[in-house]
Image (cartoon, rainbow over all chains, first blue to last red):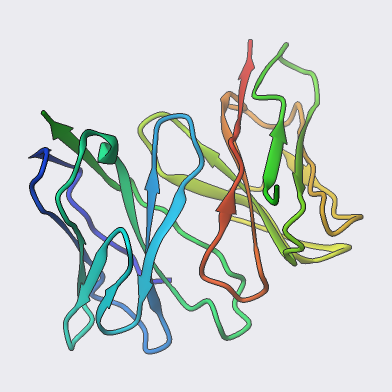
Length: 113
Length: 112
């Protein structure tokens, strides 16, 4: 599975848009990009998943350039409750693979009032 | 309510004792997973199971054992052979081949 690199931490203020970028230079053709959110002492929660271009759901957008070597999670108008660790994962989940998720250290987002 | 449950939330054991962590899901998911998380670190995969009566080692399986006798249950035993068992343990499940895993609330195990 492709290795990912994310910033260790980020700070933001309430109401701002936050963009967290993940590098995955060795992404394979069949790999998808998935983001999870984790609050302290809780299990991670799925946020969004994509393969290329742009994906948007009710909580976030995911931007993936044409070469797919990086991706950016965009959180619009963050609030204090968005303070959490955000993980970027890359893998092939559809070809009979193990379904293994490899979590790096993630990005700790601190939203300030 | 559909979901995945883990019990207990906190568990304390003496060194040298085996301990079993419970994980149950009523989501009818085929796949189940056990992860370990240490402070300030990401999750690491211990064991996973794609179907009943079959399971595979993850990246850090040494000192752990699992069983999958029923689709909804995937208990994890932390044996005395695990050198550093104190950690936060998370169980997850997913439909077969899905990128979306559903996590339980976790069990925090402390071994002294």
